[in-house]
Image (tube, rainbow, N blue to C red; front, top):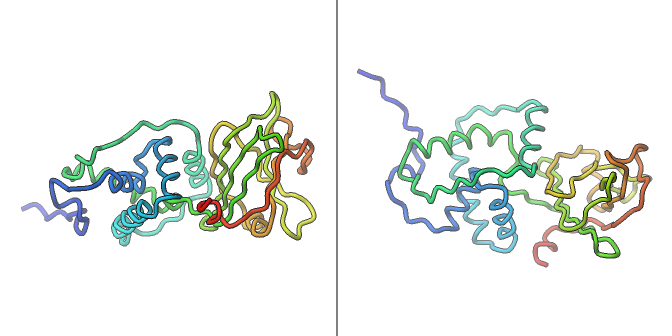
Length: 249
């Protein structure tokens, strides 16, 4: 007699029935947690999260449900190169195919298993599903031609940059700088792409400069400043402020 196979869906509420009455927002929240949304849909969903507490509650529910599945999975710390590649992929501008299941997959354990397995494999290595910044800065040039939003999340020391408007001149790049409240010189965050969002990890030393510090963007030669300090014009400056103020605004 064949050995009894473990039920990987034990304790998972949606796996036991063929049909579920689930709202569109609940479905979107689940797909967001499982990273099944394409880049555009994910950005639109995250914009809604800032203004809709009920939507955040759906996300927190699905995070908790998926976390239950990971309780018995041994924790593995990926190598720095693997983690860097994953973060780069998450922040790239490459479009991902839209994978909207319409939640007909809820009644099909085999298909659900694929989504759950993906979550279990990647969740130890990825950022938290919601990028939750504690500090924010808005960079707008004096003429209004350049507009960049930026946020810092202590969980993982992640920094996110959202270019809203403006592109560098031909042969030039935008470079971000952090100036600590007691620092003697700016510290580079690197060159940023002007055509897409970017998400990257910063060092604890740079993270320590952000609270009470200032963010600036300069116009630099292609590839960034060759000296380690701004060489071109400072285009915009803003002090970091509580991200909750940005959300409420």
